[in-house]
Amino acid sequence: DIQMTQSPSTLSASVGDRVTITCRASQSVVSWLAWYQQKPGKAPKLLIYKASRLESGVPSRFSGSGSGTEFTLTISGLQPDDFATYYCQQYSSYPWTFGQGTKVEIK
Amino acid sequence: EVQLVESGGGLVQPGGSLRLSCAASGFTFSDYWMNWVRQAPGKGLEWVAITKQDGSVTYYVDSVKGRFTISRDNAKNSLYLQMNSLRAEDTAVYYCVRCPRGEHFDYWGQGTLVTVSS
Image (cartoon, rainbow over all chains, first blue to last red; front, top):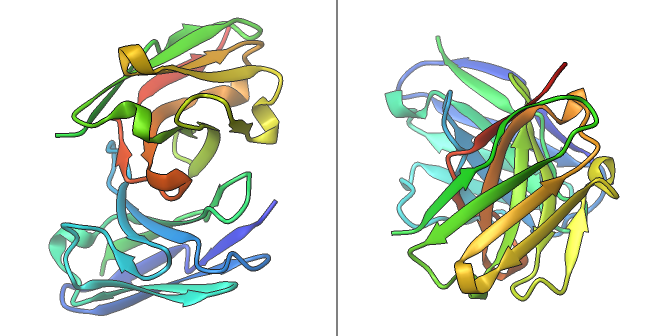
């Protein structure tokens, strides 16, 4: 199974900050990687797919990059609505696996 | 508008069975791979199972193989998860999730809670 490791696990930031979350895969997933945002009590929401493609309707302050085993999710100008938990997920090979999550908290 | 509505969750004893259903609307259900993804209380996300558009191909995470069966009825726009031999570690919110081209997850239901406890 491909292990996905996110860092950091928790991140404290202020409105307006630039935030970067890293996701590392235990073996190459090429560009078959997605990012999701989840708020308490809600279903996850797709932000980025195929490593860098922005899902329709997602604000352009979200961006994704990387390939192979190392990926980043960047939020350029953190907004109050962005405080949430973020997950990466590989869909290169079964079983599809998620990172453990990164909680973005208010500083 | 795409809608995925899960039902069938509840409290079940260890070793028991439960069948989850997902009613899909707002899109051509038979065009999409469909999945179940779960989340234990306070924990992260875990992909459980996937089925191809016509149900001819299915994959499972190892921890549920032989116990869970994913299926679909395209005439009823419905996805199912038959869960047998349930264990305490299966306790989770189960989400029905759409998967364009068999890739990422683009639409999620609101989830249904399954609690396995005596």
